[in-house]
Image 1 (cartoon, rainbow, N blue to C red):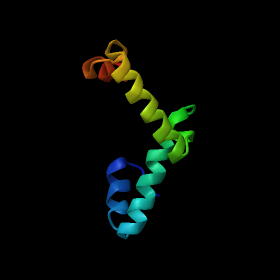
Image 2 (cartoon, one colour):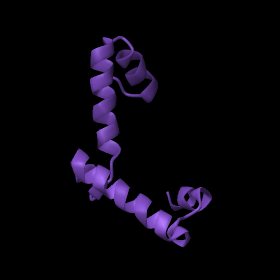
Image 3 (cartoon, one colour):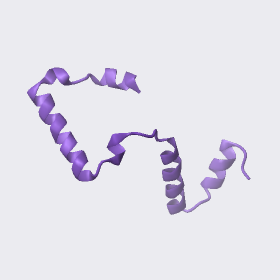
Image 4 (cartoon, rainbow, N blue to C red):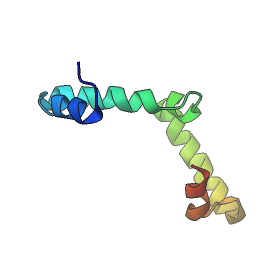
Length: 74
């Protein structure tokens, strides 16, 4: 069994594109933090939330947060 990240990467690169995509998705999902409400929304709910936020920002621009500040929240 591969014991280092370099060995894992080398083995993964030998997989088919479809297998690599599936592996990448599984790895990415393992990094997600639980409790993210956006991930649990349907497409319709997500679009409604976006529309609500756009309307709120247009009505009152003071609710907007500068990108620099958002980036620092991560």
